[in-house]
Image (cartoon, rainbow, N blue to C red; front, side):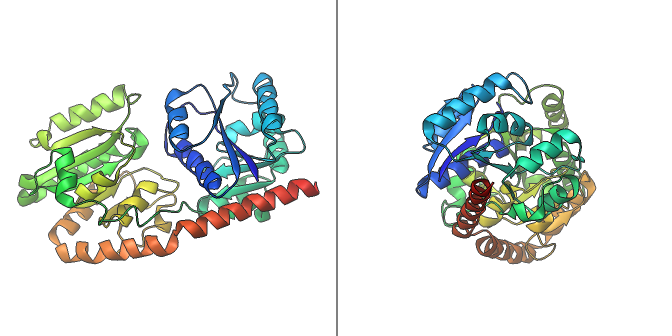
Length: 377
């Protein structure tokens, strides 16, 4: 197949990086793949690091941008593209104008949405789609409920994960802690993600405060590791997080760390991983932490319950509930046996359920079916 991945977002986040990774994986499997991106140096840098050739097109309109569509059409013709993989629904209308009637269009749906999209504009778009890849069953069900996209066009393909790379054997615990300047005797509780209200850093810090107040032994050894702060993470929320941290008696042990391309040392440094997002469509960081053998706590929302089986592969807590997060932290801290039981079960589940080779094949199959649909049309 000759494929163009299209994502007009200028930010570098999980959705954008996952779209680029899928393109890189398809290229490694022998397909001709290019990335069509806006003028966003950080995003282009990630694409080039993954070995993806980049064409830059920067729309000025969110929808139906005719100049951008013309540029895209020229790129598709030059590269003899027969399928475009679109990473965001808002980019579909411009991408479809560029695709014309011969190029297959597939939506890579990585975000959940409860919005009804059965108005005339979205109906035209979703009827034109040749296929869709959803990353969870919940995302598939929402698409079927809120759009005219027929279920037969929606394939569920979760993110795969290389459990050999994300393995507790990949890096030593002491080595990982040394990279972050964390003492070997600390009990490390961590969170990974861009600093954003929806990611739950505020609730995470509050949960640490509650747990430390109720368990003096934990208060004396606790180290909070918060990874994922980006240069763009400025403003009231980030300022508030620092004020919230600085008010704690152990503020010097709550560490803010920038976004890192390879998060494995961060997971390996942790005794407990927390995903505190208000609603996470999938939770790739949760999947990675579990593969690294870290006992995990996740919020019972979005696609997280498809990854964590409460009490079997991790602990589920209600979203936006610092008290519940604190209780889960205390439960794991006070019960080393529970931590030792959950960690290997979680890693085993990830290995069996998210084998990358199976996911690659399913993704390829979904794209091939979309291509056959466009040829038939």
